[in-house]
Length: 151
Image (cartoon, rainbow, N blue to C red; front, side, top):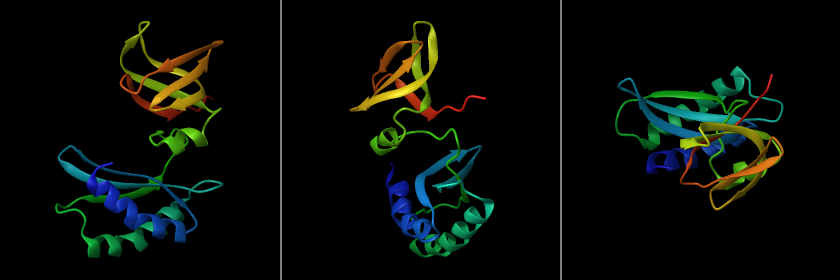
């Protein structure tokens, strides 16, 4: 996490938890010339638009007062989503046994994307079970890991 996202995470967590949700992640990034601050929340049973609105209204004045971001930005609060990205060790622990999609920086066996059941996570390395075999991807080779929802 960057210093900005760490500061915002620390400011947002008590507000989000006070509203009965959990803070999943904070992103601060530039898209098409505009800076975006995105707060991703989660809740047992799912996040509603009302949850996002309440947290946005409660957090907005706190962010204005703390002023952790020097430039102007668009502020958004949303659900972590069914296909959320797993980043922290605790994310991987929480979703052991769930189906994930692993994206690699460069192809392995001609593919850059693998889907399987999250079997292990150790020191950044991800192991999935797919088609009867375990596949281990090092942290250096792994671009992204997300929950995968099959329909």
